[in-house]
Each structure stands twice: as structure tokens, then as C-alpha cells.
Amino acid sequence: MPHTLLKADDICYTYDGDHTPALDHLSLEIKSGRKIACMGSNGSGKSTFFLCCNGIRRPDHGTLSYKGKPLDYSRKGLLDLRRKIGIVFQEPDHQIFCADVQQDISFGVLNLGYTETEARKKAAQVMENLGITPFAHKPTHALSGGQKKQVAIAGILAMEPELIILDEPAASLDPLHTEIVHRLIDQMADAGTAVMLSTHDVEYAYAWADDIFLFHNGRILAQGTPEEIFTQKPLLQTVNLNPPAVLSLFQRLTEEQVLPAGLPLPKTMDELIGYLTR
Ligand SMILES: Nc1ncnc2c1ncn2[C@@H]1O[C@H](COP(=O)(O)OP(=O)(O)OP(=O)(O)O)[C@@H](O)[C@H]1O
Ligand SMILES: [Mg+2]
Image 1 (tube, protein in one colour):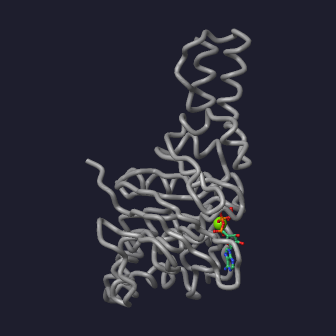
Image 2 (image 1 turned 90 degrees about the horizontal axis):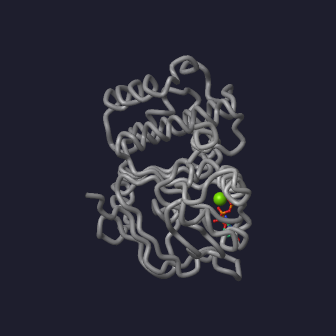
């Protein structure tokens, strides 16, 4: 049975010197083992919410709780929290601290209080699983953007979180590295880790997510399954998103009676082509 991991209850956050709140009475619940995509315009509060989730920012109002307990902002409380919730920032340069790949991947684990040997072992395991070994000997400054992203994800995975948060994991990656990162994300989700990410890629969110949260002006404007969210055109327009191409094409083909009415919504282009060719 899925249970609630993280719960945000009416949280508000305003950055110092700002007049408008970045988070404005936002509430949501994240369940174990789910694949969650947070979407919404630039500046709608996704990254701020993520930073609140692992205690980097603290809401000025409302409560965040993890497994039913309000977050504990003491040093020890935050350390415990960061064992359970891992966050991969949009910019890998904000995440990579060490000159050496292996060291960098062990860094977070060491910070959690594991011994050098344990950290090394966990890092080696993750590097092998993720196929990082080919560039493991390179200094981190000599890695490409995509390789840095993989190292940043590896560092978080080595900490074995229960919930992993990825802020625009595929931003600025080429198609090959996007595919590699998407595969890593699937591996985590298949292993039972809850994954929450932000993305502007509707095709990906539609095909991948169990739940969509639509952020708008620091609040959750709507939440639901990808099918529920991506079939509501006015809602999508409010947050500057287009429907996934596969759904637009499916709808058009149904309207033109190329396809019979009443078919289930296709998830992928392959499914849609299946309708056309069978
Ligand atoms: N470090 C900061 N200092 C001051 N204001 C900030 C800071 N970071 C974000 N903000 C403001 O908070 C609001 C929410 O920004 P946030 O980065 O959370 O949005 P986002 O949904 O992640 O956007 P994007 O899709 O562009 O990444 C914006 O108005 C932004 O200007
Ligand atoms: Mg952001």
C-alpha cells in the first residue's frame, strides 16, 4: 500500500526583499513509490518548493512533514531528512564539490556519517550501476554537462534516499544524454524509490508520470493523472503548456473519423500508430 511520504500543508515562502510570495499557501501530498512530475511556467515556484522539501529553505508559514512528522530544522534533524530525501539541482555545478568523480560521489555519503570504506563501496556500486566507470578517472572539471549531471545523480543515489527530487533533470542535455538520464530515473523508480521531478517536457511527463502537479503563482492549480491533466486545454493554456503531440494527433484523427470514437487515450506514438495499422 502506498503511504504518504511528504506532505505540504498550506506553506508560504517569500524570498528576502521580494514583494510577491514564491510559494503561496501551497498544499500537496507525495506518496511512496510514485512518479511525480511538477510542471508550470517559469517562476511558478517549483524549485522553491523543492528547496523547502529537504530543508534548504524553510517556509514562513504552514507545515512540511515527512512520514507524519513536521520537519525538524535542527542540524541532526536536517541530516536525518537528507538521508531520506535527495535532491539533484538543475545546475550540476551547484552539486559537484570534489575534483575527482569517485570522491564526489562518496561526498554525500560521507556527510551522512558513513565511514570512508563504506562510502567508497557505495560509490563504486552506484558508478557501476549507472555506467559512470568509463569517465570515473576524469577530474570533475573536465566532464561534459551530461556527464556532470550523471555524477550529480550518482552522488544522490549513493545516499539511498526514499524520495529523490530532480529539478529539470534533462535541461540542457542533448537527446542521447537526456535518454541516459531518463533511463537512470526509470531505474530509481523501478527500484521503488519515489521520484519527483520538474520538467517543461509535456511529452515526457505524459508518458512517464503517475501524477502531475501543475504549479501556478506559487500554488497547485491542478493535480491528477497525466490523462486527466493533459486533456484539459484551458487549464494547460493558463500555465503556458501545449498538450502532448500524441494526444493532439489522436484527437484530430478521431475528429476526422480516421479513428473510431471511444478508443482509450494512447500513451505513446507507437500506441497511436498501432491504432492506425491494425
Ligand atoms: N534566490 C532567489 N532570490 C529571490 N527570489 C527568488 C530566488 N529564487 C527564486 N526566486 C523567485 O521566486 C519565484 C519562484 O521561483 P522558482 O525558481 O521557484 O520558480 P520555478 O517554477 O522553479 O521556475 P523555472 O521553471 O524557471 O525553473 C520567482 O518569482 C523567482 O523570481
Ligand atoms: Mg526552477
